[in-house]
Image 1: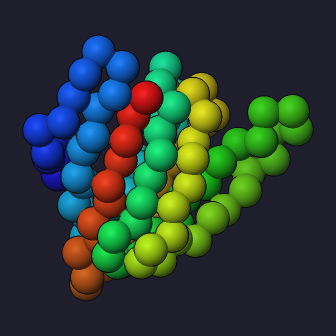
Image 2: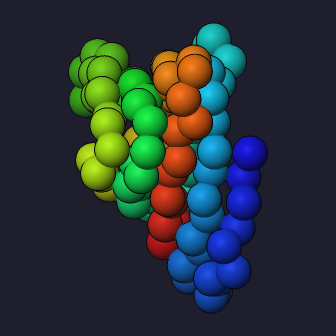
Length: 94
């Protein structure tokens, strides 16, 4: 569930995302034109990134309070979110 929290300019957008057991469909990857800074407020998630130079997949586990900056066009996907607990993401696109 994507939920804009009312902060947006020409260059910055902030969203709250709620998920519970959702993941990016198999074989699909995000490849965004914007940088994305992500703070996991609650819950757990595993993100997978494709290393640009080697094509190697790297998994990153996030828990409450963890954050990560995702550069524009770094291919990534959500592999797992906690199935019984709501995962709350705060995403800043810039």
